[in-house]
Length: 149
Length: 193
Image (tube, rainbow over all chains, first blue to last red):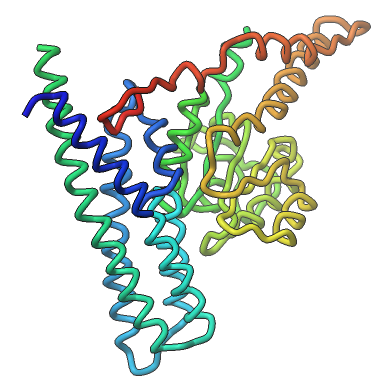
């Protein structure tokens, strides 16, 4: 695939993510912070976010699996996840976390379980698109470095 | 001279979230600040040369050389020492109280904001912090610079005190903002070229 076609594909992907509400303007901020001195910035942040989120989702699943739920711990993780999704522009994940926080505050186990499922659903939808995004970006970078040699 | 002012300005960023540390570091570097990031209030105090149980800096230890910090930017919600606790420690220290402190929070709680401002914070930023927010740091840089210049001139001459803040501000406004020169636009890439 030509460089132009790759760029076009990436563009279409990112735009569709904005349209679907997966991403918000904060993601544009991240893109603006990437430049020649920091060419891998967005990829780095996305990767960190995914690692972090999956770790937290695992912990949350364990916590809600207990007979007696420690809502303080649950809240702490949801707060963290909400914060990092907000920082990277992961809009749908952030919104799902807000819902989750609500149920947590009410100590509502059923609500929390359903909210956790929603967060997972939103996260994994985003994750698969992030994976495609990173693959395309890698291929584009490969072209650029070929041209430089 | 104005170009050097920001390049030498050293910011200490404190946040327990790795992602937020990466972000604030990038934001600050893009704006030409020197940055050190730490993940807790107690580490921040170490960098500042202040141990938790003291209000004056300890003598320089062989392992840590205290670096000069011109501004502290800290998250509010952190386990252990909160951003507010850190703020109070800094403002309560005779040697550190003049360092401007900015508090960040993801939550827009007026009572929290007031508490911080009353506690001596120079600014309060809502997260996620934007490039445009960093412009609000400028008056604090200029204040710091003109204070240094004032001290310099007082040392050189006992009678003449010159305030340089006016001319500094003008020089900075005339210079193209570093954020703007870095924004390039194109399509089809994660880099907004």
